[in-house]
Length: 168
Image: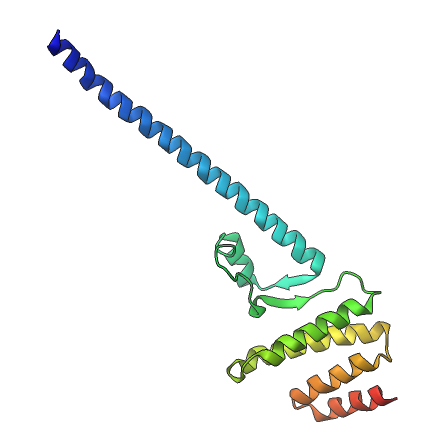
């Protein structure tokens, strides 16, 4: 009898281990499914928000988000990820003006070692400010900021043009 129960327990031990392993692997699969579903939802939300805000991200940054690494860090967004800002409400010049001024401020705070990035942000700023001027051609604040940016880009003819326009 002792021998029979010992043999019976030998069979039940692998069965119990196999059942536990199966439960753990099913739980791991469910956890991975939940994590993947959550990441897909975040990615979908990221695309919707960037589309609504009119932000065009670089291919590298999109690849990073698609590979699901983009949401892992504490600071997943960097200015270098933005290729273009595309306003959704063209009749509201304040949106372009705000974007242009924000990009200028970001460029202004970059240190001198990031001159290439600073120039890129100044150019994006100018694009937005010019779109704003299409709707409101005499806005002195927008004209003055364009003058400042062209001065920082060492484009003196354009800087003086926008200075003259801002004084009219």
